[in-house]
Amino acid sequence: MNTVPATAAASDQPPVTKSGLEAEIAVLDAVAAEKVRTLSQLAAAAQLTTGSARGAVARLMHRGLIVPRDTSARRGAFQITQRGQSMRNVKGRRVR
Image (tube, rainbow, N blue to C red; front, side, top):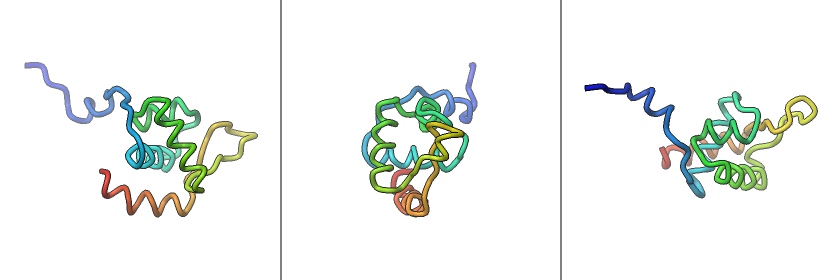
């Protein structure tokens, strides 16, 4: 029998359409990791479709939970605010 380790299987998951809080927490987790630079990379890191990631980013920015990084150096990169980190800590426990 050919088995795949659980860690490898989780990273190979196809993107899914999540909405609302689940998508926002996934985006906050990806932004907090500070390894994503574009919306496509953010969607892949959060295991979301590009549309779900785009919607979550818009909602989070509107509420001041993430902000763009220095746009002259890294266009499309985001950073999590203190309020965003608090939401990630509190509400993330409910989602995960």
